[in-house]
Image 1 (cartoon, rainbow, N blue to C red):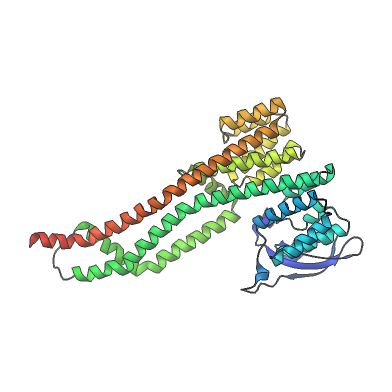
Image 2 (cartoon, rainbow, N blue to C red):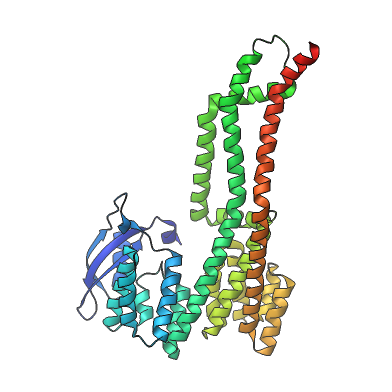
Length: 406
């Protein structure tokens, strides 16, 4: 866990494998020493390890995204289904990619396959791009002689999971954008607009209404301390993001808070359940034992509460307890989910039931995000209109008061 908490750096390495062949690659690691140890455990004797150069504006620095991996997996599945050998498929992917980093990755994997290694072993050289779940599914496909079918399953799985991730981000970004826009509009009015009225009111010689005086006082705070206000907000956001990545306790607290947020919490919960059931169904379909599959499912949940709950489920299942009963004990899964899993266990159709649950919750997430999207624009207008309206009324109250006296 400590290694994962440190910053990852991209290294380019060269060395010799167990057969004396020269091999090259590119991996992310916390240090050159740590990467050297990993390579040695894989049977590679590294001769050169250096940090990848990162010019500020270079297409070579373009990262390989999960979406890229999803597309590559689908293309790979199509070519294997068409009878194209794996090494040749990888060469085609390498040549056709417009992303230099992805091209180098595919080329390294191709060289590993041509050297006689299994595809799963070759993918293990890029553990960040191809996680344990991905590699386990590829291994299952290789062992069963059905790699083409398994690559199709992986492609379907990656596409659906990436779709769910995108919807969660959308659900979380909308409220953040509303708050940000409201704050920016308020800051502009406080710093640039209200001071103009303050200068005008200075010559009135009468007591200002409470709303007007309050806005002028708040404007004074913004003018004097704007750097501290903006610095605190930006610093707080950076610190929160840092702690979320580095502190398990903070991540647990924020993930728990996400689930309790109005509207957004429901979307996050449904999306997490969809990822849990979709991942478990895919692992079942690959013939991976339940206890082993739950390790990968925990990592795929994307929420610390469900991560911990999945590990608890694994511990219960390993002692012989039924999956549905263990899921019920966590208190995080709706009755419908646990009942369908229970029916699947009794009928021997648990993969089918899990797929149905995943389909249902993915559709629920689609509907919820669409509904929230249709409401967010009017909400932004109401919030901004309320802020601007309050300030306009506050600034014009003294004028109306003087007009009434005259």
